[in-house]
Length: 163
Ligand code: SME
Image (cartoon, rainbow, N blue to C red; front, side, top):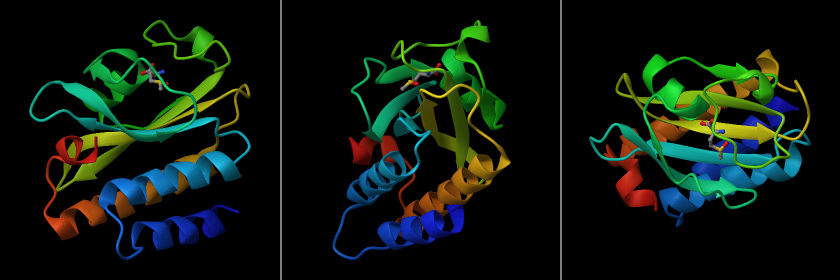
């Protein structure tokens, strides 16, 4: 399953005559439409040199949380920890920003460019405890591909170019 998805993501991220933003949007749409436990899929990127994340392309319900300070919520914690954060039950988290009452679980995987944590992919699920190592591996691979997309184009500040 995830091999096929990764192959499809690879094709979308390399599709000619589309902007990087369009390619990331296509990846969000693909994942949200094809993985039953992925109900919201989005990218956040560091907002310039500010200690905050800015929402980039996403698929799913609109969110109020278009800017998230470093340290705040699951996303803000990953901006500082540089580690994947798998949350089987969001109700058990003190430092959590609720987007929708339907969300039961979340996974955030950081995205590195030239060794620097410049953003992340964030997935919300309406299914309790749905994420396993296969999700982490898939999302790490996608983040690696997105990072190559940026480095090949000399994009160092995706937040300013994607939204
Ligand atoms: N739940 C996230 C906020 C972003 S939304 O999930 C889209 C958090 O706690 O950081």
